[in-house]
Length: 194
Image (cartoon, rainbow, N blue to C red; front, side, top):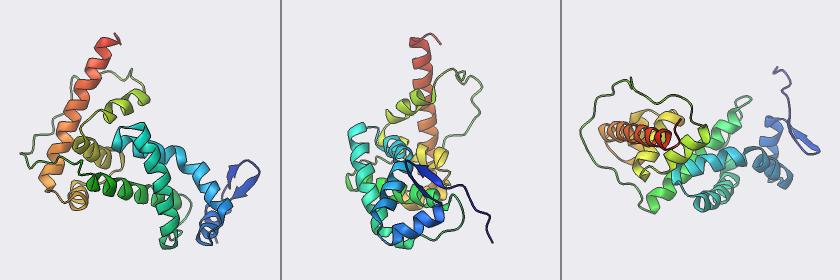
């Protein structure tokens, strides 16, 4: 028997993740509202990381939740936190499908660059929000692979399969994204004298 977990608290309504997932499957509007209020911020950040555009991220956030509600029957509760992980996967796939439909990927088969440590990496005096903004400025292909590999924890094999690219392309896009992001961070630090 599972120990009772702390319920998700929003306003005057309390649900455990298990109860929330069960009620979502019953098309309970209060449960839908609860899910949205609890996860909208994180899912908006995910959408923004991939698109780099606030308005586009907001549209994808709303459409993504509609997608979640339409496929919630496929969710299987596997313990506390499994709903959030499943939601992140649905949103990631939804955003990637959107970007593919919009043909915004620019993936080239290029040679793999060696992954060398950044000995002269900028000091950590830059905020996470600023780093996320700088990631948003990367070209779509770079940004997508960087997000999937670094933030979502996907392997280059998984990325290659999902994006229909070579594994070496995923690796090189990641390395190029990392290099460009480092340049952007260095430039930001120089401008702001940090």
